[in-house]
Length: 83
Length: 270
Image (cartoon, rainbow over all chains, first blue to last red; front, top):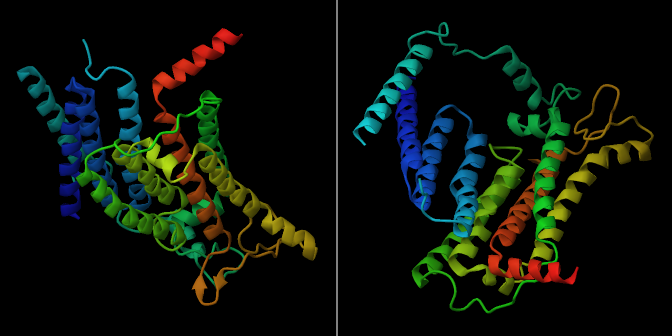
């Protein structure tokens, strides 16, 4: 039980770091990769919370489909965020 | 940068303290490790051959809830997803694609070989998620999302002209997606048709017999459990989601210059 909570805390902390990096990153392609990393740690958290159905849909959507859609979008606009 | 790090560390500490209070610290009362009353209802009815009027005949409670207990909800969710896809099809209507040979496009040979190795594994996993959707975690949407990764890999590694080379055009994707939707629509009305033919009372989206509607779809084929309508919904949804996403990727990867050129041409005519 305690191990589950520990892994949950570690994965959510990793997600926090990835989210932070995704927000501050100026290169949009790198930001998408950080966002996908955040999704991977969310997947682990969902598995630990005993929701395998959500894991199966969350993984392909957030690591495959969503970055692909955003990358198509980035290709049609600018690659670097300007402040 | 230093200020950012301090903010990040403070946020992390706050999250750790909050989650400790909420869970191990007992902030939300003592942790509940038993089985909740609602869970007991579902566990007693999801696969119970001794209670034929209240069972969904599926050991996977989530799929049973999604396509049996609250089937109409899922039907309308599916409708929302397909309306979004129809919207993007409408935006790209009348755009002709230039046919090119895919050779010379795409990424390096190493990436192409690895992609070719990954695709059979991906098909096997996605198909098993769809066909075991009523037995193990997963189902039609999950399997379709896993399968939709394949056309995306093909577009990125081999270029979009490769999809046209293997004859996976917009029209075919739209047609197969419609076959999937038609499968769902027909499965909805199967119990009603059985009821009309046999002169029995039946409801739309009914799976197993109810007290006042004794129409059941077959739960077993031979000795293997297929859970009546659940496998049909899962396979149809799998087809519809796979080719819905495929269609979306084909549309997204059309060259922007081509679209602008044709739209401008259209503007001159009017």
